[in-house]
Image 1: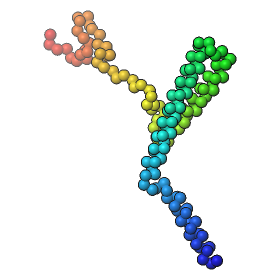
Image 2: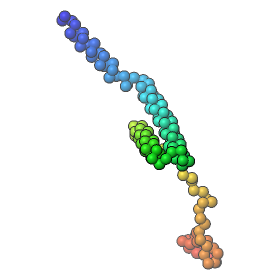
Image 3: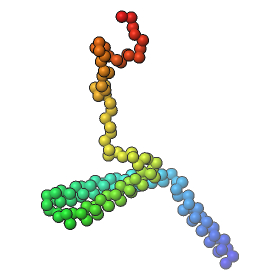
Image 4: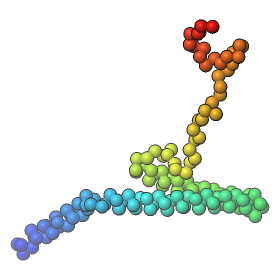
Length: 139
């Protein structure tokens, strides 16, 4: 019995060391990133499906298939579920350090082009005021 006590402590210590060292093993971060990517893909698909359900319920209401009394609780439930999905997506974004405002599904703002810029207003003599701050040149 005198050997069994230290042997049990040694086995328990080895098991604890095994469990605590797993996050540092090679490939653990990649597996965690892959699991997060799969979860994000699932949530994006759920978000699209929930938006489709909301649009379908609104269409059924507008065409008269659903009365106001039937549509309001359905719409409220669907919107609550959509908010929960969006909250989970935001939680994943915060875990990875990305900003909540940084959504891939939002279209990018168009870049300003030279055609979008207004020309400077013309002066009385028809010249542009673009160089008005420059000293007058010899006339």
